[in-house]
Length: 248
Image (cartoon, rainbow, N blue to C red; front, side):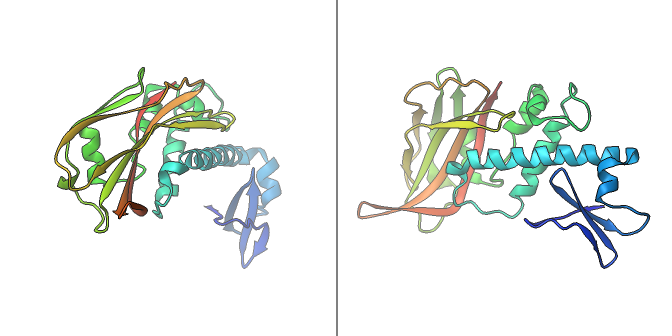
């Protein structure tokens, strides 16, 4: 059994393949044996398929909403595998929900576990980013004060786009409701460094501490710029995004 991809979901039989939709998720399999969408929705022996489809649809909605919530950080970042990797992340967190019945397991419940929060915290939205990894190694995040302290960091030691003259670091606090998929994001003033600058220590802080009512997530974004005669040009190359902390 395979899932249908794309915006248009087919139903019926074409060329010996049955196409059907369950809970908004499209599936396809070889025709035969009276297997169709109506059977999937109603036959008792198709219960496991219905359960899987329901949970897959939930994780897909969470993935979309979470990615949109982080769009100010991910803007310009293009990677063909990010969608699949995020789906794997949220299905893994959903599987940690031991309080709900199969078919109704939810990502939000999975995040109530230490393992679920660890999976989200350590997920690499932009993998293999040497400069961002170096920043994290030189930093410490204080959640109560919502201050990121960075010690003796030198940007010139790490790869950057040829046109870049500056790198920016942006701290954000995201409050995400994994039940309603609503969210709010507050961003600290962006800190700029020349890519050729020597090692320095500095802090990035929110103007005011943001209280979170649901799942609180600290985000760090890295982006490169070209500055020419006081004109600033953003570069989409080598965008970096990581989570600093996850609190429930």
